[in-house]
Length: 346
Image (cartoon, rainbow, N blue to C red; front, top):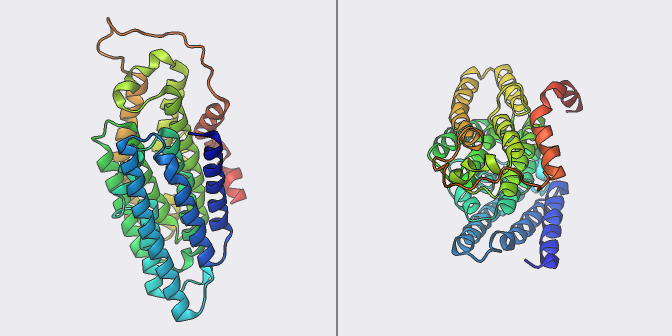
């Protein structure tokens, strides 16, 4: 892709996100979301492969439908209450339609079917944007309207997302699809807590974005698109494979690593809200996604390809690990000890 064109699309992405997260008026927020959608489409379809074109088309249709619903929700609220302010969304029907619109934009169950397909058709760098940056504006809209949303509906969608995100990721061999189902599962954790502790949902999103960025950039550096390629990666870049193992376990939420922090705080908050059954259910369902993270970790570090005799191993590579991967991986692994500082900032 032409560097100037790439610069224009990246600047548009930043502009769209900034407009949405800083606006108080529904029309401005909708405009920002539309700019975002139009800016990411060329980045999805830049390879001109039929699968990439299909992914871009699916993404466009789904996002257009979600934007129309969002506009309809805000207009209904304005019709009944005379308010265009995002924080003044009080009409119950508007809240219901808005929840559906944002669930479609994020890829929450039962509106999740488009996300794995779109991610599979996109390059890894665009996949990273779709999994993190493109989810930020809808999450901020949920954050701003959190006091008006229906917590029962969000809890149901969250538990289903965690269940299906884990269950459907079990049988995948493509790394991008595995990461898509991982994203759906993590969104369940954010959706369940957004009405009770919005700041905690945002903290969860930031840490999820950090860990996902580390995984995507590592895989992009090693050119890994499926599990069979991941099995041969240890001989090419042992350091990256070892850090990928730790980042994946952090994404799974295992205790000494960063990913345990949001899960621990969310379970604590749900218990305070007298929802121990929901907390137990979502904790047990996260074991499903733990299985496929362990599978990825196992493939990246423990297995060697079965055809060892005729497989050309490159033991020494002089390609240095990029600074951004090093920083992101370090943060993905080591933030748990400073959790008291993080909590005071919140």
